[in-house]
Image 1: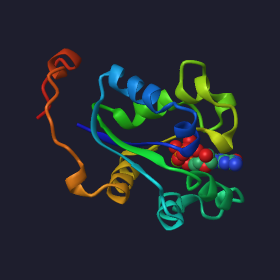
Image 2: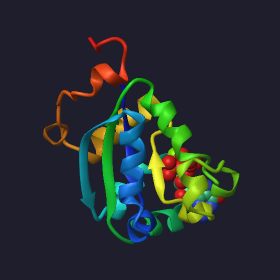
Image 3: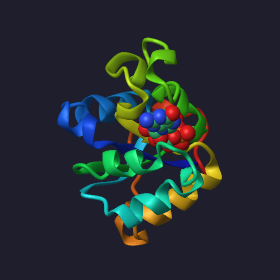
Length: 153
Ligand code: GTP
Ligand code: MG
């Protein structure tokens, strides 16, 4: 099944939202296959946000996401990239519906607590950037037949 890269940013960690974020993905039925806490270097963050390097907010973004530890996760499940983005809400928290993570827990675009891959292609790149293959756990969830009608191939 599909995988996505989800990262709780330093504000989400400081504000005690790690458990709440994990809970939402678990309860939806997605499977956690990798997780770690990390103080990300500016070099790693510049690679992660390379597409935004020309934006005026780029230096502030690198400083913000590098200002404390982040919690890095890989979640697996059918359509998890698109569904994960829906669960996060919009980039701007004030445009995010209540019920979404950003819509429930933050206000400012520069403090929007969580990252989620925006396509399957970027998910694969981000998973490779943040995790080594050995850090990804292949495991079978006993919930699977209760979450999915059909088994994964
Ligand atoms: P991520 O999941 O973090 O990648 O957010 P996104 O995909 O919803 O938005 P995008 O990739 O365009 O921007 C990455 C991050 O840069 C956002 O999550 C914000 O933290 C920050 N950002 C984006 N736009 C702005 C902006 O206009 N001002 C500021 N200060 N930060 C911004
Ligand atoms: Mg993005």
